[in-house]
Image (cartoon, rainbow, N blue to C red):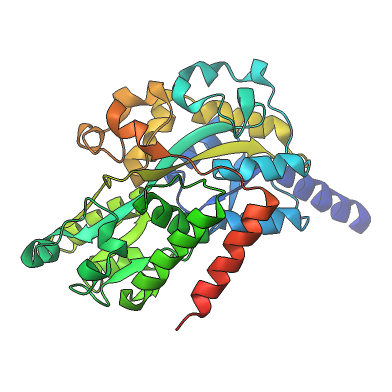
Length: 352
């Protein structure tokens, strides 16, 4: 009898695990209410595991981490994952909601014909700022000069943070100098690095983790970061009834735009639940909940009628054609360029 009780307990545990979708994604990328809605539909549980940067996710997956069904990489992370054989092609016959995608986000060079991926949001790398303080000292935030020009930085010394991310910071410095963020030209990289070295003494920190809080508290006045984080900081400051206003906007030299996508792990324990989840997230109303919850842009055309009107008026969330033309996605780097950037970044971080 004891043997059969043990066996029944083991079988029950196996059945429970079998009805679980494991999602490896950015923190808070999908609204909790949306997850609960999917759980009710699929009669399963969703277990979420988070990563803080694409580099962290790539390192973990490349080292052999398994057990994930759906992964939510930034699009420039898709090529290396595919090259390593860590993804399985999508069965598009099971994704009729693919028709909802905005064509501008489909069939990109990072994943031709969407063989592996379905984009679910996009964020813009830009400047978030304390509009009240900058107005008082006559500093404009519609240019990358507010982050890189020592003459301007002298007015806000110690009140500026940038992401602790070489791809984003070097890319912004390249744009400030009039170059593509995907430049492979050593001379252009050299100029961008020189720009960062000149600006760094005026910065408070490299900060990817707490700049939302620091902006909200008024400890920093300018942050190079992500549009959805700036949206959150703005909401938090309003909720706390701060005596200042936070704002964020696009820079005239151009901005980075990173789309995030859902892909299915090659070793997914439940690929059936994975494809169900992606199809579910392609439904317009479900897709819109991402934008409404975290202020990210949306690559799903069917989501627009369900997105709050005040968010559609924000250029970083709903750019017009001219603004969209100045948004540049980061590309996968070749080995030589990646090594050059990493070496330059290491030297920058060691600079005192």
